[in-house]
Length: 140
Image 1 (cartoon, rainbow, N blue to C red):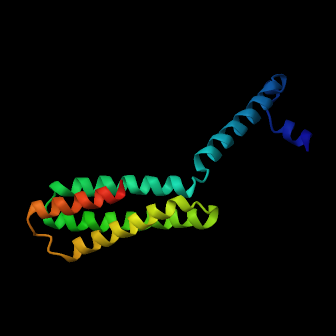
Image 2 (image 1 turned 45 degrees about the vertical axis):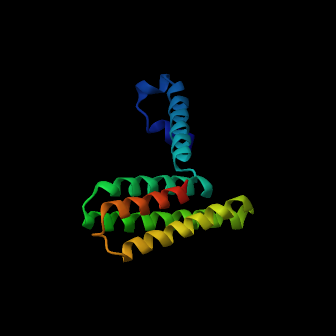
């Protein structure tokens, strides 16, 4: 097997035996970097990331046109459902009961977003701003 591997290499490179070790070390380093990039994040980290994204979406929806608001609210609702899923997995797997209040707040915020979607989006900007502020307070 080794002779087959060595015969595949030109005669000039055989004198540089350390190139094989360097190539192997480089391949191992690349594999380690790829594994670090692809490692699974914890459910709590994913949920916090989702909540931060939902806050950004809701905050930016204040200055948008009514049609864009509806789309932003639907995106925020989807992201909040994702956060609720990750937190509930974290509670069930690791029994972190201090997160139950957080899950309940996310459920309330999701319900308020659904109500805001069902209501007339063309309502005055002040009413919309108050509703978004109350949702953001629940998520904080």
